Amino acid sequence: PQQDGLKIAVLCHASAGGSGVVATELGLMVARAGHEVHFVGSAQPFRLTGTGCMSGPYFHQVSGFAYALFDQPYPELAAANTLTEVILEHGVELSHAHYAIPHASAALHARSMSGHTRVVTTLHGTDVTLVGAEPAFRHTTRHAIERSDHVTAVSNFLADQTREVFGTEREIEVIYNFVDSTRFVRITDPTVRARFAHPDEALIVHVSNFRAVKRPEDVVQVFARIASEIPARLLMIGDGPERPRAFELAQQLGVIGRTHFLGSFPDVQTILGISDLFLLPSSNESFGLAALEAMSCEVPVVAARAGGIPEVVDDAITGFLSPLADVDHMADRALQVLRDPDLYTRMGQAARAVAVERFHPSLIVPKYLAAYERTLAKK
Ligand code: GMT
Image (cartoon, rainbow, N blue to C red; front, side, top):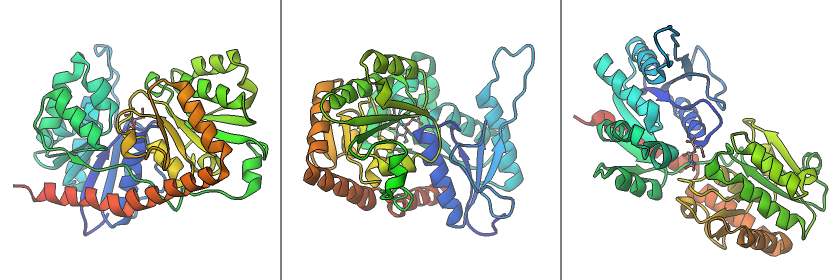
C-alpha cells in the first residue's frame, strides 16, 4: 500500500458502459499519480487491468449472500458492507461513487456504518434521466444526490437536468468525460483495416449497449441509405436488448451481408482507429463517451442533437448533428462527409484536435483530484 497520497474507494458498474469506463480509466490514472485506489464492485470492471498486490489498484469483490427468505440479492446492502470493510481495513478516506443508484446510496450507507470517509458522487446520465426519474427510485436518488459530500455530472446538460428532475439546488460540478489520445489514435496500417472492409468501402461504426435509448435501429436505417449510394460496411460493437431487433432490420433492409455484429470487447480502439464515420442517433445521451473516443481516432461523428452531445460534437466542424430520429438527414450528412475527401480530412483532424485540446486526461483528471482534495478539506 502507498504511504503518501489519498486512499480512495471507487464504486462502479462492471459491465461495458460509459460510467464503468470513466470510473476505471480515472481510477487507473489516479493510482498512477501515486494514490491508493480500491475498486469495489460485483465483478471486476471490464476495462480494469493491471491490478496488483504491491502498488494497486486493488479490486474487492462485493460478497453475495443467498438466503431462502431473501427474494432479492440486495446489491446495495452487500456493496455497502464490502465497502465498509475496505474503509475500515485500508483507512479509505474518500469513496467515489459512479452512478447514484445503487453506488452513491451504498457509499452513504458505508459512510454511516464506518463513521468516516467522504462521498463524491458522479452522475453519468441514465441514473438521473431514466432510473432516477422513475417514481420507484425518485426519493432514493434525490437523497443520494443531496447527501453526498460533493456531486459531479458529466455535462452541463446533465447538471441542468438533475436540478430540474429532482428540484434540487445542490451544487453540481461539471467534469466532462476524457479520452486517452495516445491509445485512441488513427491506425494507418492497411492490413488491420483489410480484416474488416475492402479498400473502396466506407467503414461505418456504432458502439453502444444496444438499449432503446441508443436507437440502434436508426443506425441500421442510416446505414442502409448510405449503402444504397456508395460501397459501405457497418460494424456494430456492443450488446444489449435491442440487438436482435437491429439484426432483424438489417435482414429486412437487405444489408445484413455488409453489417457485422461483433459483440462486446474492451479494446474498441482498434475498430475506431480504422473507421471512417461514427453513428450515434441516441434519443438521450448525457455526454457520449464512445463518440469522443471515435473523435480521438480522427473519426467524424454523425449524431442526433440530443442531451449533452452538442457539448462534445461541434455541428459541421467535428461531425454533423441531426434532428432526433431523422434518419434521412443523418444519411445525407454521412454521405456528404464520406463523398468529400477534403471535408472528411478536415473534420477528422478537427475531431482529433477537440479530443486532445478539450478532453485530454491531463485537463480532466486534475479536476477530479481537486474535487477530492476540496471534499476532504471540508469541515
Ligand atoms: O450509454 C450508456 O447507456 C451507458 C451509460 C452508463 O451509465 O454507463 O453511459 C452514460 O455515462 C457515460 C459516461 O459518463 C456517458 O458518456 C454516456 O453518455 C451516458 N449514457 C447516457 O446518458 C445514455
